[in-house]
Length: 512
Image 1 (cartoon, rainbow, N blue to C red):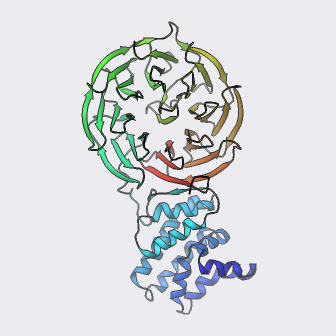
Image 2: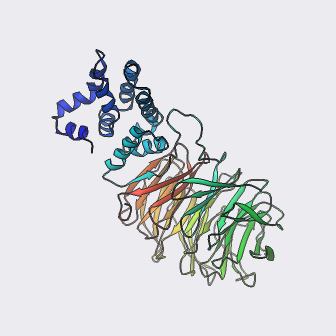
Image 3: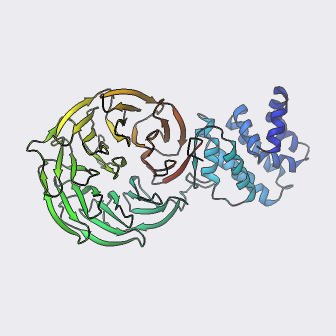
């Protein structure tokens, strides 16, 4: 807390309110004390208190006084005031409904400006929070006084998915335009992967973190060298768009799903097709490999609305009958080696997709979500449906299973997230707070917190035990996908504009 903030806090309530409302104008009127005016308008404690008392409009007007005093201030100081005002103005629509977002909004819009006064202000902002919050690690919002997207953000279309390397240091985003590799520690874009002639539907990173496989609407998959960003091999064989891809835990095998109604198993070292899995009668929209690497689950669209369980080694369907039960579209998410979901794969031409499949860490059960408003729990060994979980009033878009396998969470178009007990098949609680469709959800490695991503332009962190909302971050566009890195506090999320956001959860155990 700055000396000014401490001094303001020591004043009586009436004196403090007067100072907050009128002191900046008093400094400027009569052409005096412009230095003090500048000191106050660059002090985070004062700005925050003024915002809370008077609102955004009057706070912005205080910065308009700089036009009077700019002849008495250096060019650098005038520019600093304009930047702060610009950041506040761009954030006005968010701050008007939630003033607690102020620190995050300033950081998201000003982090890339190196002026000492700006960095000093942001350091005060970081220290001001005494409750959990999501702190931007890079300038991931539109910068102050700039209307274009930042150069850090290279996607020109919506981000379809995000895959995170096992060491948590690298992430790859897939979009309708291309793929990008990111350094998750610095939040910088490392390289762009180009080569597909159509949109990239999904991406998966091998367990060694050295290679990745992408799936595309151009009917192919590509294997990439993550370090150099070069395409090593192209996998051809599908006769229609490839919608999803998963890599086995040993990294030697991959499975792709396609709109040609088939799945294909590939040898990733020789880039050869090992076998084709047939049986679905509609588009195959998702595939997940169990943590033991022996079985896979695929999901199809409304043509057959089924899930199928496959033996990867033999390429055979484990049961002669197809697991059925959903009456609407089933699409998917990539499953990480520990059974947690990583990203949504959302086909672009249907309004009722973004469904999900997650496999429990013990590989014995799976959970699926569908547009029929239900969540289903399956026994993967017997291929039987154990229970249908009802409660959502709209399509279920995403599902994730906690590391202990005892809890699952689902996200829905009904604007809620639900927590389920997978052993008793009961709903534990409903998490309410989003104001629009919830697209994605992920659970932290400790199983205590979860993150949800919504079209209401927010990410929310939840305490799974209490169901309490711990923190929220507001962006400028709806969020399509989200993931939590292995450190449990770093969050990666993709929004509909093409931005990839890197944030850190502060103020929760392990978050500092």
